Length: 204
Image (cartoon, rainbow, N blue to C red; front, side, top):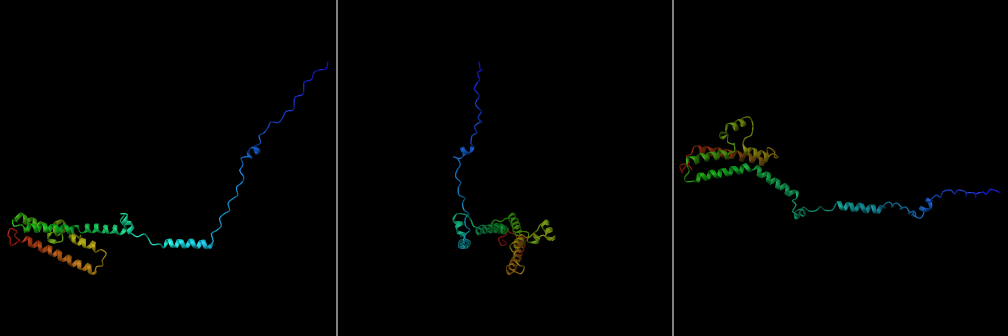
């Protein structure tokens, strides 16, 4: 008997490979055309842009009144307010001296002025002089004056107010003259107050 031969095994097939090209081809978008670079502006367009820029720069500025209409103070108003505050601070000693003299005058005008009132009047006159009368200065202020320190308040006010004026400026010369007259008036008033008896109506 012939031996039974088993059928030959079929030849091995190579493994199937997934084709990436075929799968990706349906999803690939067609290439878009590249945009062409813009053409450089012509000379006419450049000139028009330059003219527009010049006109915008030469346009009139917004008036300051527009700022005030919105309730916002302009620079001039702020500067004016600062000057007012500085002037009020600078002239405060003068206003205080005036008030002191007014109160002294009220004491003198009283028909029942006493010796105590007389002393108060003398003290008020000395205080209103603001250390400008040499004989009314206390020892400390007198020492400062001898060392070259300016102690007269009215002189300091004048120096600050006229700091930007020349020494021979007519306005400054007149102010110096008026200051000298004011100091002399305080000195004469103090002398009169020291030598008067305010209890007598004639001296008042």
